Amino acid sequence: LGLVEAGVVVDLSLMRGVRVDPAKREAVVQGGALWQDLDAEAALHGLATPGGLISTTGVAGLALLGGIGFLSRAFGLAVDQIVAADVVLADGTHLVDVGRGVPPPPAALADQEPEVVPLSRARERLKEAASDAEARAERAVAEGCPDARLFWALRGAGPNFGVVTSLTLRLHPMPSPPLLFTARFTGDYKARLALRLYAELAERVMERPELTAYLFLTQPAAALVYVVGVGDAGAAGVHTAVQPLVAAGPAQASLAPVPYTALQSMHDRANGPGEYKWGRSTFLDSLGSNTRRIIASSWRAAPEGSTIEIMQLGGLTRREGTTPLPWRASTRYETHPIVKRGPLDDDDEWARRTEWCDITSERLAFDPARVGTYLNFDSEDQEQTASHYGPYHTYLQTLKQKYDPSNVFHRNHNIKI
Image (cartoon, rainbow, N blue to C red; front, side, top):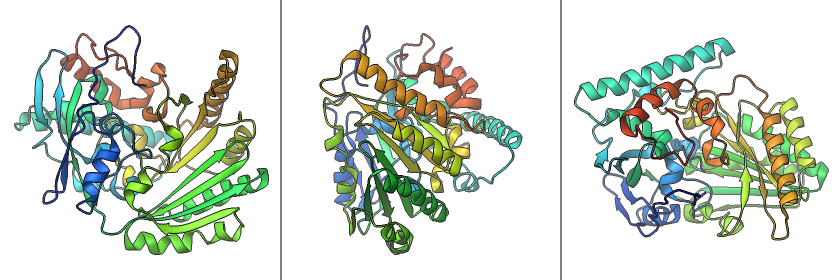
């Protein structure tokens, strides 16, 4: 993901500075910083912000396309935490503090939990949200915030508009470490049971954003369930929520407070330098019996070493119209099959693995109400870009024409003009 053929790579890896202002609860993060850099500095002040699931991921790259992590249900996506950005445009213009002074979206919009509506109404709502977002950006420009349009575009489609050299991110108090429950189930029957119990648990806690559940289905046959509780209410809720999982007799289980920096780095070793993986993303509004059958049958056919990961969303990830990410309006789960290239895999074996990944994703994309995919987890599928942005795509094309008319920044999920 970090290199391209016949292109130019702007290497920001030496720009890893992080400056935390505990009074403002903000951090200024240079463009090459990793989440481990930010997490460590914020933790010194009892603060944290939503990131990804791997601490060696770059802050800017993840945040500019969304950013789903352990704190997202409680505080929103990583992109929601962006207060301002320094960015170099295609013509060399260096803009500083883009977004500072732009009015925030109405509180009712930012904190809403969209109601369940018929498909036709859901599509109309998305169109209305796109129109409202465009109107807010244009109104902010008219009221004296000239970079309001660019700020809106950066927070969800950033790689198309410039090189972000610095981000200012909002931080949140983390007075006590999150409480982490883990349970590992082995064997085909127990893993499929874990899938059902996970779905039931996630539905029970859907309206409690201080709790978040994750499921990892792997081959050879096993399932790993995480439940994370944030704050006092989250810690108390974990104990009750996980009882059915404990009663099911996992091969291993644990419950302990874990510093946020340790929580963020749990998957670093399995995703270290040199790992070559392929993944696809699908958003789902439920994990009903039919969806679980699709997941289970795909998992049973998976090549050894592959994984199907399911992340619970909802809570403050569902902020309709605040960013050009239409999937936020109704998505409750993100699922992605991932395959890893082994050291002995030839091209034919790698093609077989990626084909399983693609077919699994296609089988899960059966719901016509779904709009878009999570581009941070979707490997190089340029054709998905327009559908990913849905009704926001037209306005993004207008802004692309303004800020990058020659499409200099095109080696990405490209917004074509």
